Length: 63
Image (cartoon, rainbow, N blue to C red; front, top):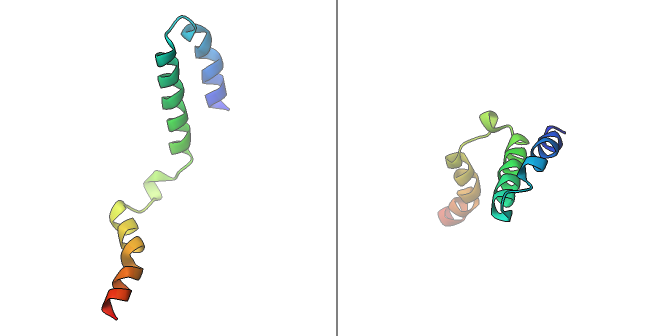
Protein backbone atom coordinates (compact mmCIF):
# COMPACT_ATOMS: atom_id res chain seq x y z
CA UNK A 1 0.00 0.00 0.00
CA UNK A 2 2.86 2.37 0.84
CA UNK A 3 4.48 1.65 -2.53
CA UNK A 4 1.27 2.67 -4.29
CA UNK A 5 1.17 5.90 -2.29
CA UNK A 6 4.80 6.66 -3.18
CA UNK A 7 4.07 6.10 -6.87
CA UNK A 8 0.93 8.25 -6.76
CA UNK A 9 2.82 11.05 -5.00
CA UNK A 10 6.01 10.97 -7.08
CA UNK A 11 4.74 10.08 -10.56
CA UNK A 12 3.36 13.54 -11.47
CA UNK A 13 6.79 14.98 -10.64
CA UNK A 14 8.45 12.31 -12.82
CA UNK A 15 6.46 13.09 -15.99
CA UNK A 16 9.08 15.47 -17.37
CA UNK A 17 11.94 13.07 -16.62
CA UNK A 18 13.28 10.71 -19.30
CA UNK A 19 12.04 7.12 -19.54
CA UNK A 20 15.37 5.86 -18.16
CA UNK A 21 14.79 7.72 -14.87
CA UNK A 22 11.24 6.37 -14.58
CA UNK A 23 12.46 2.80 -15.10
CA UNK A 24 15.18 3.28 -12.48
CA UNK A 25 12.64 4.71 -10.01
CA UNK A 26 10.26 1.80 -10.47
CA UNK A 27 13.06 -0.77 -10.34
CA UNK A 28 14.45 0.55 -7.07
CA UNK A 29 10.98 0.83 -5.56
CA UNK A 30 10.03 -2.72 -6.53
CA UNK A 31 13.40 -4.06 -5.34
CA UNK A 32 12.77 -2.46 -1.97
CA UNK A 33 9.29 -3.97 -1.90
CA UNK A 34 10.59 -7.48 -2.62
CA UNK A 35 13.38 -7.20 -0.04
CA UNK A 36 10.93 -5.96 2.57
CA UNK A 37 8.97 -9.20 2.23
CA UNK A 38 11.93 -11.23 3.51
CA UNK A 39 12.84 -11.34 7.17
CA UNK A 40 16.47 -10.50 6.43
CA UNK A 41 17.79 -10.19 10.03
CA UNK A 42 16.51 -13.69 10.81
CA UNK A 43 17.63 -15.37 7.58
CA UNK A 44 20.65 -17.61 7.67
CA UNK A 45 23.79 -16.49 5.92
CA UNK A 46 25.18 -17.60 2.58
CA UNK A 47 27.48 -20.17 4.19
CA UNK A 48 24.50 -22.00 5.66
CA UNK A 49 22.75 -21.89 2.27
CA UNK A 50 25.84 -23.43 0.64
CA UNK A 51 26.01 -26.11 3.33
CA UNK A 52 22.35 -26.98 2.81
CA UNK A 53 22.79 -27.05 -0.96
CA UNK A 54 25.91 -29.23 -1.01
CA UNK A 55 25.16 -31.58 1.92
CA UNK A 56 23.57 -34.24 -0.35
CA UNK A 57 26.62 -34.13 -2.64
CA UNK A 58 28.93 -34.58 0.36
CA UNK A 59 26.98 -37.61 1.55
CA UNK A 60 27.13 -39.05 -1.96
CA UNK A 61 30.88 -38.50 -2.16
CA UNK A 62 31.47 -40.23 1.20
CA UNK A 63 29.88 -43.46 -0.06
